[in-house]
Amino acid sequence: MPRIFTDIDDTILKDGQPVERVIDYIDETAEEVVILTNRPESDREKTVADLAATGLEYQELIMNDGSEEAPVFKARVIKERLDKGERVDLFIDNRADSREAVAALGVEVM
Image 1: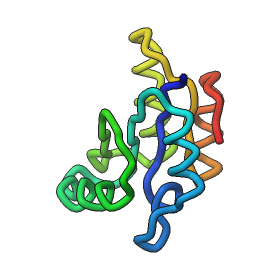
Image 2: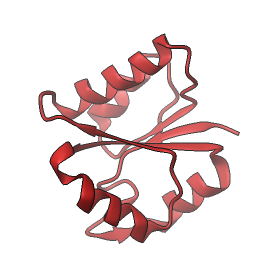
Image 3: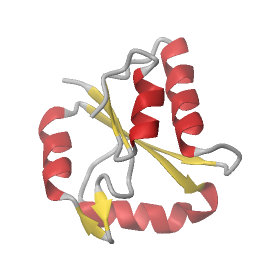
Image 4: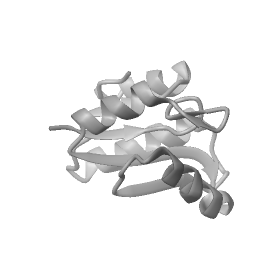
């Protein structure tokens, strides 16, 4: 089963509500879930609470320090993981520019 990296806003949460079809897909498919969000680190407490409301189990929450735009930030994190030999089987994000940046690294995107 795959290791999935997923965004939060407009991907697994939309207007504060869980996006059940995406969450169900991740629950049924993923061996491990890493949340990769452009939300700033200063919003960690709220983000953890938002994620708890989805019921999605995840192993890691990676947040932006605010110094990079979402596509650059997400592609950099994924590349660093790949360079360390970590698996990144699928990246799920609502933004086309973030998907394109990660797909350029050879990672399957949705």
